[in-house]
Amino acid sequence: MSDEADCGTDLVVAELSGLVFEATARLRARFNAAAAELGLPPAQALVLVNLSGPAPMRRLADWLSCEPSNVTGIVDGLERRGLVTRRPAPGDRRVKHVVLTEAGEERRDQLRSRSHALTKTFFALPGPDQEHLRDLLARVLSDAPPDGDTR
Image (tube, rainbow, N blue to C red; front, top):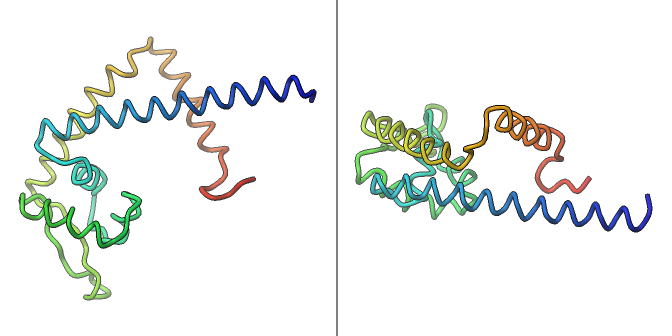
Protein backbone atom coordinates (compact mmCIF):
# COMPACT_ATOMS: atom_id res chain seq x y z
CA MET A 1 0.00 0.00 0.00
CA SER A 2 1.29 3.47 -0.84
CA ASP A 3 2.03 6.18 1.71
CA GLU A 4 -0.85 8.18 0.26
CA ALA A 5 -3.26 5.27 0.80
CA ASP A 6 -1.92 4.79 4.35
CA CYS A 7 -2.53 8.47 5.06
CA GLY A 8 -6.12 8.21 3.77
CA THR A 9 -6.75 5.11 5.85
CA ASP A 10 -5.27 6.75 8.93
CA LEU A 11 -7.55 9.75 8.42
CA VAL A 12 -10.62 7.54 8.13
CA VAL A 13 -9.61 5.59 11.26
CA ALA A 14 -9.13 8.86 13.16
CA GLU A 15 -12.56 10.08 11.98
CA LEU A 16 -14.17 6.77 12.96
CA SER A 17 -12.58 6.93 16.38
CA GLY A 18 -13.78 10.49 16.91
CA LEU A 19 -17.31 9.62 15.78
CA VAL A 20 -17.52 6.56 18.02
CA PHE A 21 -16.29 8.54 21.03
CA GLU A 22 -18.81 11.30 20.30
CA ALA A 23 -21.62 8.77 19.88
CA THR A 24 -20.60 7.12 23.16
CA ALA A 25 -20.59 10.47 24.96
CA ARG A 26 -24.05 11.29 23.66
CA LEU A 27 -25.41 7.87 24.61
CA ARG A 28 -23.89 8.24 28.08
CA ALA A 29 -25.56 11.65 28.42
CA ARG A 30 -28.92 10.13 27.51
CA PHE A 31 -28.42 7.30 30.01
CA ASN A 32 -27.42 9.79 32.70
CA ALA A 33 -30.53 11.87 31.92
CA ALA A 34 -32.73 8.79 32.32
CA ALA A 35 -30.99 8.04 35.62
CA ALA A 36 -31.48 11.64 36.81
CA GLU A 37 -35.21 11.42 36.01
CA LEU A 38 -35.31 8.54 38.50
CA GLY A 39 -33.17 10.34 41.06
CA LEU A 40 -30.14 8.11 40.55
CA PRO A 41 -26.50 9.18 40.26
CA PRO A 42 -24.85 7.71 37.11
CA ALA A 43 -22.69 5.17 38.98
CA GLN A 44 -25.68 3.82 40.92
CA ALA A 45 -27.67 3.64 37.69
CA LEU A 46 -24.89 1.66 35.98
CA VAL A 47 -24.85 -0.89 38.78
CA LEU A 48 -28.62 -1.15 38.76
CA VAL A 49 -28.95 -1.60 35.01
CA ASN A 50 -26.18 -4.23 34.85
CA LEU A 51 -27.30 -6.26 37.84
CA SER A 52 -29.39 -9.20 36.69
CA GLY A 53 -28.47 -11.65 39.43
CA PRO A 54 -26.31 -11.80 42.54
CA ALA A 55 -22.93 -10.28 41.76
CA PRO A 56 -19.79 -9.93 43.85
CA MET A 57 -18.56 -6.43 44.60
CA ARG A 58 -15.43 -7.17 42.49
CA ARG A 59 -17.59 -7.68 39.38
CA LEU A 60 -19.32 -4.35 40.01
CA ALA A 61 -15.90 -2.69 40.23
CA ASP A 62 -14.98 -4.24 36.87
CA TRP A 63 -18.22 -2.96 35.27
CA LEU A 64 -17.54 0.51 36.58
CA SER A 65 -13.79 0.39 35.89
CA CYS A 66 -13.04 1.49 39.43
CA GLU A 67 -11.49 0.25 42.63
CA PRO A 68 -13.59 -2.08 44.78
CA SER A 69 -13.41 0.45 47.63
CA ASN A 70 -15.37 2.91 45.46
CA VAL A 71 -18.10 0.34 44.91
CA THR A 72 -18.81 0.23 48.63
CA GLY A 73 -20.13 3.80 48.60
CA ILE A 74 -22.16 3.20 45.46
CA VAL A 75 -23.76 0.07 46.90
CA ASP A 76 -24.33 1.86 50.23
CA GLY A 77 -26.37 4.46 48.34
CA LEU A 78 -28.41 1.81 46.53
CA GLU A 79 -28.95 -0.04 49.79
CA ARG A 80 -30.18 3.14 51.54
CA ARG A 81 -32.74 3.52 48.73
CA GLY A 82 -33.88 -0.08 49.28
CA LEU A 83 -32.83 -1.10 45.77
CA VAL A 84 -30.18 -3.70 46.65
CA THR A 85 -29.11 -5.82 49.56
CA ARG A 86 -25.84 -7.56 50.37
CA ARG A 87 -25.70 -11.28 51.02
CA PRO A 88 -22.80 -13.58 51.80
CA ALA A 89 -21.66 -15.62 48.80
CA PRO A 90 -22.70 -19.27 49.13
CA GLY A 91 -19.16 -20.64 48.77
CA ASP A 92 -17.29 -17.95 50.69
CA ARG A 93 -19.01 -15.96 53.41
CA ARG A 94 -16.23 -13.32 53.27
CA VAL A 95 -17.42 -12.35 49.77
CA LYS A 96 -20.55 -10.22 49.61
CA HIS A 97 -22.96 -10.50 46.71
CA VAL A 98 -25.10 -7.55 45.73
CA VAL A 99 -28.69 -8.57 45.00
CA LEU A 100 -31.56 -6.50 43.63
CA THR A 101 -34.60 -6.12 45.83
CA GLU A 102 -38.08 -6.12 44.32
CA ALA A 103 -37.97 -2.30 44.35
CA GLY A 104 -34.55 -2.50 42.67
CA GLU A 105 -35.92 -4.69 39.89
CA GLU A 106 -38.75 -2.22 39.31
CA ARG A 107 -36.36 0.74 39.24
CA ARG A 108 -33.99 -1.15 36.91
CA ASP A 109 -36.89 -1.83 34.53
CA GLN A 110 -37.91 1.85 34.64
CA LEU A 111 -34.32 2.90 33.96
CA ARG A 112 -33.99 0.52 31.03
CA SER A 113 -37.29 1.72 29.60
CA ARG A 114 -36.43 5.43 29.89
CA SER A 115 -32.91 4.90 28.63
CA HIS A 116 -34.23 2.94 25.65
CA ALA A 117 -36.71 5.69 24.80
CA LEU A 118 -33.95 8.31 24.83
CA THR A 119 -31.58 6.06 22.86
CA LYS A 120 -34.27 5.38 20.28
CA THR A 121 -34.32 9.06 19.36
CA PHE A 122 -30.52 9.00 19.00
CA PHE A 123 -30.66 6.17 16.46
CA ALA A 124 -33.60 7.67 14.54
CA LEU A 125 -32.48 6.26 11.21
CA PRO A 126 -34.57 4.33 8.69
CA GLY A 127 -34.82 0.64 9.69
CA PRO A 128 -32.37 -0.67 7.07
CA ASP A 129 -29.77 1.94 8.12
CA GLN A 130 -30.18 0.96 11.78
CA GLU A 131 -29.68 -2.69 10.88
CA HIS A 132 -26.64 -1.90 8.72
CA LEU A 133 -25.05 0.18 11.50
CA ARG A 134 -25.80 -2.59 14.00
CA ASP A 135 -24.23 -5.20 11.74
CA LEU A 136 -21.13 -3.09 11.10
CA LEU A 137 -20.61 -2.40 14.81
CA ALA A 138 -21.15 -6.07 15.66
CA ARG A 139 -18.58 -7.02 13.03
CA VAL A 140 -16.05 -4.50 14.33
CA LEU A 141 -16.54 -5.74 17.89
CA SER A 142 -16.34 -9.43 16.95
CA ASP A 143 -13.15 -8.87 14.93
CA ALA A 144 -11.50 -6.61 17.51
CA PRO A 145 -8.72 -8.09 19.64
CA PRO A 146 -9.38 -8.35 23.38
CA ASP A 147 -8.74 -5.26 25.51
CA GLY A 148 -5.03 -4.63 25.91
CA ASP A 149 -4.15 -6.82 22.92
CA THR A 150 -2.40 -4.75 20.26
CA ARG A 151 -2.58 -7.24 17.39
